[in-house]
Image 1 (tube, one colour):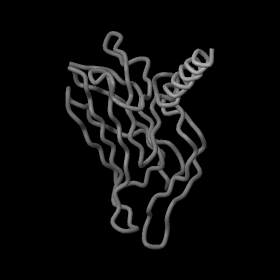
Image 2 (cartoon, helix red, strand yellow):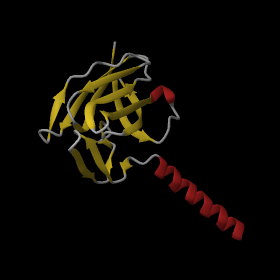
Image 3 (tube, rainbow, N blue to C red):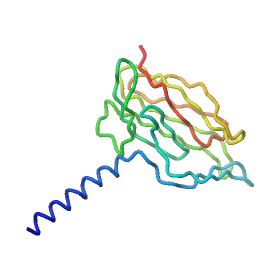
Length: 168
């Protein structure tokens, strides 16, 4: 009887461990960005989702996320953050970083790896620290099967990506 309860307890633990590994919520953290030798930007980021409404990805500097997506027509749907790449043909890799020299901000860089057999098009919106507001920005489509790098000289506290679609 003890073995049976032990197996049930282990099964429940494994089930919750799996949910935790692929959770969509980031833990709260302090975002700190270099500005110059005398200043830095800091903000308390609350627990928040990586993917909003299965279609918008919000990412902060220093984060690297894996996003699984289904394709319906030529539109990416059911975006879901996963802990690791288990389905390489349908998982985007997205990384957003700040490049600095010492304490001096140089630029922000977004890298997106497109696993699909068609070019990936998307929209990007950046939250500029200088103005404390969101603005649309231009991005280049990501060719099939490769990575694309976007850079901005501005200090950006977060980026939101949406309108993912595959184009010829």
